[in-house]
Image (cartoon, rainbow, N blue to C red; front, top):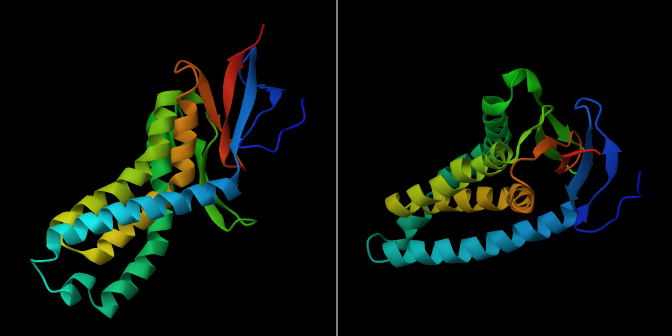
Length: 203
């Protein structure tokens, strides 16, 4: 097995015992760089959506009303913790829809080193379903709440959406990396790192 390279994408070649004639190639993202990417996304998306929000609502409601009340922000902060759990559950639900063994293939846990919850699917699947599972939490708890906030004029809800779009930075990065792979390949979620294995046929 080749020594892993400490770069944006780490790769290794190792036999995969469960699929005859296949090898697995590891692809893992650097969590530090993923966090920097998340900050960039939060800044860019935050500036764009906040500017759009005030462009729509600045002359419709008083600024104090748009900002919301203190209890609203407190509820939002508490709900954000629940939202992190929901983020992982959405991963699991989406993967379970495509896994042959359904929920039996799904597990949840926490990477205590990074204080990061995770969802893991121990069954290989095609790249497109895996990408969908990567991106689904971003849409459900990030993009959709942001759009609703723009329609109803809720700045707290907008900030909720921006936060969860940024929280999906690692998922977005992995989904983008998978666009470079053969869509007919199989992908296996990594059990303990932010990454996956690409299943390749051996000679």
